[in-house]
Image 1 (cartoon, rainbow, N blue to C red):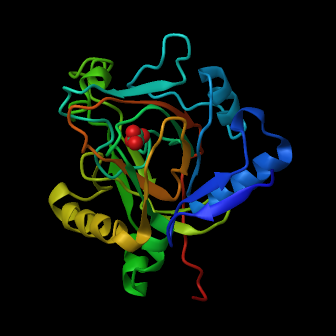
Image 2: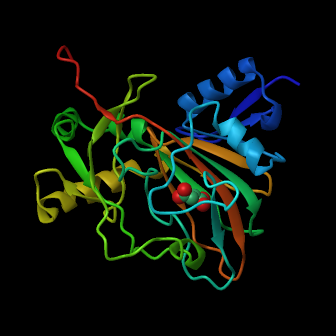
Length: 281
Ligand code: SIN
């Protein structure tokens, strides 16, 4: 069967058909990676994967980026099991973010495999930060191009009970990471906004929270405008991958009384490089 790539929305997201990711050859992988870079989020339906097969597929990109504050499955520490139980009021990732921005070399991509999903709800939203950057005025592009963000993991943020139980001592502060607010994609050179909501991107480097917050708030509101987004409805066996270097995502918490279980692998990335506006533009 030949590979089909079907865009999900105008700005971001595509379904890939005709691939069994547990048995993928070099040519197919190249097509998949090209689609990931172009569409920011790709997904495959009806995949049947063991944890080892999921890891093997992820390793085609890079080795896993181990989460500094959450532990993985006992037999596969590289895989974090994201579980929301029916009586759990909170879920994991219920805010706009890019994975592990609070580390010096954040995850380049994330692979999420749906094991158990509610019949309705539990979708994930994605927003394309390249489109968001492109839509800014020239004056704003100049200003944001000079800023760096101060990012820190918030261990106390409510997450699903199962996940927060794995978070170590809340007393020890986490180490912050400073990144350019506009980063250049290492494979396409395209600029994108690179920030997370105010629970993680606390302020701009060398600026106070009070000074930073209005602009962070504005940029997030701008960056998550509906026309820059898509919405992935999971089914059991859906495998999604997103490029953290150019998209934000948010897991919806709209399925009270239902269970959702996902297996997540984050892939190692490199330290973000600041984008410099070409002098002739
Ligand atoms: C995440 O934020 O990485 C999890 C997304 C999801 O569970 O949909």
